[in-house]
Amino acid sequence: AQSVTQLDSHVSVSEGTPVLLRCNYSSSYSPSLFWYVQHPNKGLQLLLKYTSAATLVKGINGFEAEFKKSETSFHLTKPSAHMSDAAEYFCVVRGGADGLTFGKGTHLIIQP
Amino acid sequence: KAGVTQTPRYLIKTRGQQVTLSCSPISGHRSVSWYQQTPGQGLQFLFEYFSETQRNKGNFPGRFSGRQFSNSRSEMNVSTLELGDSALYLCASRLLGTDQETQYFGPGTRLLVL
Image (tube, rainbow over all chains, first blue to last red; front, side):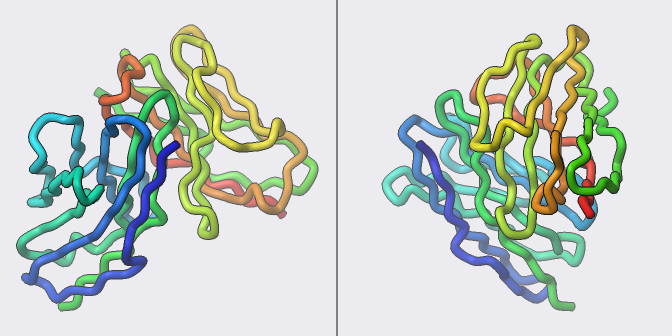
């Protein structure tokens, strides 16, 4: 069994300031972890993924995430927010033969 | 390469009807998965097909079914539609179906049941 908890349903930051979206996971297997972004009325786009290689994963658009097994966390960060980052972000886990398990999503708001 | 395509993009049906949604994966991808997205339940896994066989299934009633053709295109069918079936249905494809592969999502089909 696997599960994902995104700790914040909404995060609001000012443009140019750092972004932190928090995610904790649970998995019976050695998991693969993903962050996806969904802009309004669009499909899901992969930001980055962890698959048991380096624990610090760099993704597109300046995002990165760090896998911490001891804390069962996979938080998403970006040093400087841009207006175009406003979207819904999903932390996702895959373990074993199950399909992807999605978190409830974090709505990122960028203040000008 | 073209991305994952889904047809139709929007659909309106009435309760009791049935609906068929179509998904064409990225060329060469053999695994196709389906997900339902609703405001209340979020994104939930429906099922995955690989080489025309269902590999695994989420926790949905038997009214939800699917199939995959020899060219990897997939269809999802929902029979006896209920109001609660109104959702965005997303299809995703990946190359060989291994755990570490990225799934690439289509734009979705938005279904409204009246």
